[in-house]
Length: 450
Length: 106
Image 1 (cartoon, chains in turn green, cyan):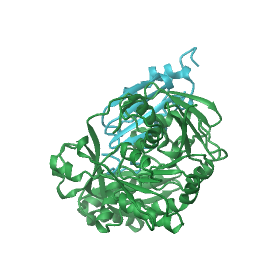
Image 2: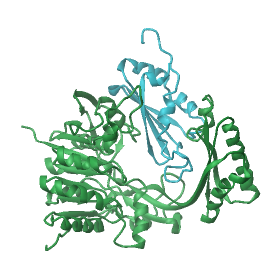
Image 3: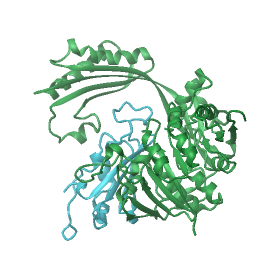
Image 4: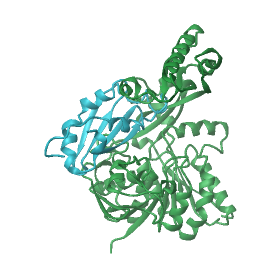
């Protein structure tokens, strides 16, 4: 009989809900629980934190998540794979060991994957940046971090060495799911079609609730039951790569052909060339079939050889953003909002605020899609003025919000609820690094008394 | 009729590029999507938002189109001044597109 594993997806981003992961562990019949928690720029922010405190730099919810799921995962021998290591997988593994010990689970084997930090290799080669004209060295002291998207190999190796919990930093999101498949089934790392289908499974599962009805409901065309208790998905993967996506019985949400198709194309560009560290996956032949309630079979993922490079996410300091908002309502709200915008526009000039790019918009009218797209919409009852600008210093950024706040006593009638903010910006760009220059390693972190 | 009546949609983001899927509820409407939801129309619909090219990929197996829109996210998710830096709300705007129901294909 064909072997099958069940992989649960316990988080789709860093701040995601925790209770669906506990529900998956308790009632999902899963052998693996994956937490994808690392956004594009999260590593760069975590790297900043680590520079201030060398035992920090991992996901802020790591402790809470581990505390919530470790008892049930340990009792059911469910393995955990996560990128909550962020900029410091070793410290995350040590923290996890501390949590495990405090729960009386000191026998758990915890592995950290290091080696995604490729800042030195990138600097040595002065690699060109993909998104704009420039190179790594040209970022100068604005450069914060460079982390390569690692593949499934090191994580699978850690599982095969007996790890109960595998904590990585930057890795490709689908690879977090591919690793348990490679480990459980012994898939060769050059069986491109299996790796392509496994990547498809990982891609569908990596955003957790986005395939069970989250980011989907649009009444009355697309209704989803019990969204408040939205359950997270389970992938049933066979050793031949076959895949059924489902969820915990009785949880909220739905797994349908529609939810699966939307997630299939989420953040995908050319569907024939989904570039991954382990394989170039091809989703263009995928078939989606509903085979039961909340059970969808997805087949046809293919693959071809991986490229010679790894994508590297480069974090850099990119100036500051200042922002201010204030609301107007009732008859003439839009006219007063527009007047307010004009006043702020002129005052920023009069007072010599040094801002580059600036945005002036009315939330409720044109803030999301601009004036052209919104032109034919009806006038709303209330609007919110929003002004945002990019500056070189925090001091200038603060002045933008101030000029919105002063509308209280220096602007149109009946403006209320002003808000202002100023923040530094850590932006992310990409470079391609020859893959042999990233050298990932597995480190086991001992529990108490080992 | 509106595109929303025959198709659903989701937006994704990578850097300064946004992608929007357009998926027919019923495969019989896929030819309408192919014929009327063109790259040029999508680019025109997002005038003032999408500054770069719009490329369309076709996925007949799932009766879907995928639009990849360059320079669409105010310089990129991590640095954009926009309220919706990810462009997550763009899919809803696209579903407002007017579609002509071809006789016999309703």
